[in-house]
Length: 232
Ligand SMILES: N[C@@H](CCC(=O)N[C@@H](CS)C(=O)NCC(=O)O)C(=O)O
Image 1 (cartoon, rainbow, N blue to C red):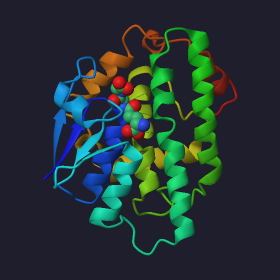
Image 2 (image 1 turned 90 degrees about the vertical axis):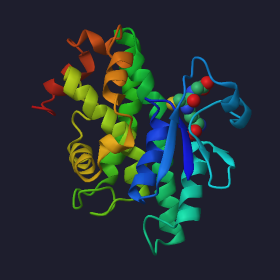
Image 3 (image 1 turned 45 degrees about the vertical axis):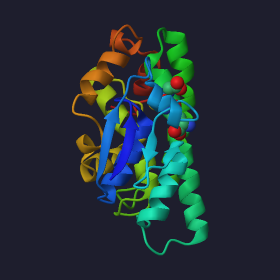
Image 4 (image 1 turned 180 degrees about the vertical axis):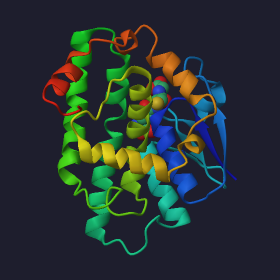
């Protein structure tokens, strides 16, 4: 069986678990501490990062983009009959999502208002690109069927939903099509199966303790958005 080496709150891992679940591919998962990486992990992970996927033949694959492409190649594509052009576009939109995982982590970890606003603006620009791309005619990114683009953006949209539930801060404020996509995606995917049982506790403990978001009130970017009546 495939084995995935993971860290509980890693978005790159969640993209891979979501893809494995979508294809109903069974896998084992082992969580490690990134503060104290075990030697066996360092021996198999050239970049020292999770995810690492151990194939059925025991080969250690690293870098989530490569892992996602391996799963498509080895177990068959999530969607059949996608043209080369569309596949390139899907990959590009997926990369745009995964390229912002660390940006979202950075926003959430910000300790002060100025840093928070600067970082949030960069991430907002990416969500705004998606807002412009979505037609609003289908619930998910391309249609009513789950695609690799949906899976690539799932970690960002899932985390945005948790942050909103705990702080009222909405990464998607003023972006109604992205909000609708988020709602549809979180309804279609059994998101709890893409993360560890203690994910939300660990995630909120990490990002909502001694951070700017943890203060919970008076977030200027949100206020500006609300003043423009984007969010009612
Ligand atoms: N480019 C890598 C990024 C993965 C990544 O940043 N993983 C983080 C956890 S979310 C990690 O392992 N950090 C430990 C480190 O960099 O030492 C990928 O796509 O797999």
